[in-house]
Image (cartoon, rainbow, N blue to C red; front, side, top):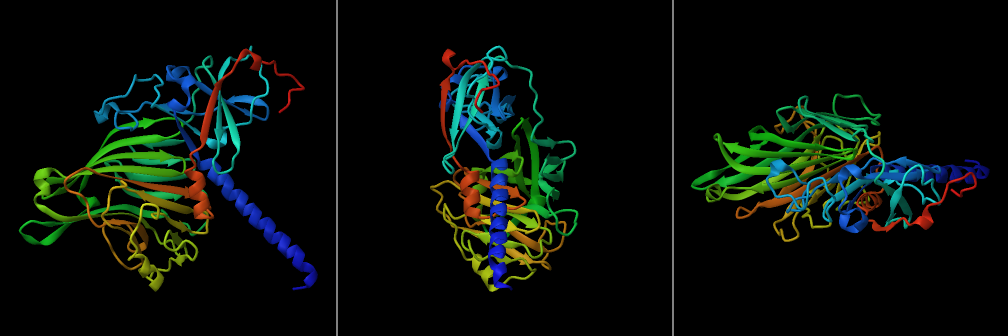
Length: 442
């Protein structure tokens, strides 16, 4: 290359890097959902959900912001009548433990002045990102009602379709844990009916007085959706499942499946009846997502955070080495990048006092059949293996999956997407009630 062209090449490279970084940052902002507890917003406590409207300043104009208020129960979960866990506080009234949800990207700049004749604002909410130190603002009105926001996510239970503007997941209408086609809007790779094969759940245990072990998988699960809470920001599906052996329920699952525009949060409580527990030994479980022929994708994890393994249909020595890694509480993430407009980042959360070993599950083999599956091969099959399930108590875990067209640096992504911002709120006094005019600073 001509030496005179070096500066130009470097400049172009830097601009490309900056562009990619900005794109990744924008994606993170678009994904980030802020969930605040009302105890952080004392001015809101005691108000009716229906009376609250959030507004933000965008280009000098106050506009309504999609938001969601949720009642919570005595176990610290979003409340459902069908869960039979008592409600904390009063239904539809903001109590200190209730949640307010909105998107970070929908927040705006500070309001310097506004026309009090247009609407009465009574609270300013300030949110400080712990990652960027940027402060953004929202405003609360109790005098604007009747706004309806298109839900960012939807679940059509009759058709079994879960969707947002970014993805569509088709499930078995009779069992939403049985995943079928998954498509992602920005994917630019080889056209295929589905990027993912299915979600795989498997439990293996020994049986008393029998040297053999039994393995139960998706084909042995019966799932019933108890209720669906669909709001402007997220959809939560409350369900119960049971693994059956010889037509007898042996393991029960209580499931909360939270769906956001670019992520799933699956919380599961596993319970084995005491009479069944006496007959089982050394129970184990695996949870994984099987990709559909995602050839040339790259996989990073907490154990190989810099140098990725490549999906090529056969297990390399570096991939085999991952199977022997034991996961610790802060080392559970795995990221797959197709480099063609679809990335997925996953994490597993278990109680801090859970001391049984957990390892990565990783299979890159396009020939290996491992039921249940719709497409032969593990292309790749990525997840987690719990080497022991407690039989004397309810075992809880949460599996999170985030989607993007390009995640970039996984540490940066995780730090931003899980950012816990600092929050402050204040009552808007009469001194703040200024008439907005042409010379108002923006």
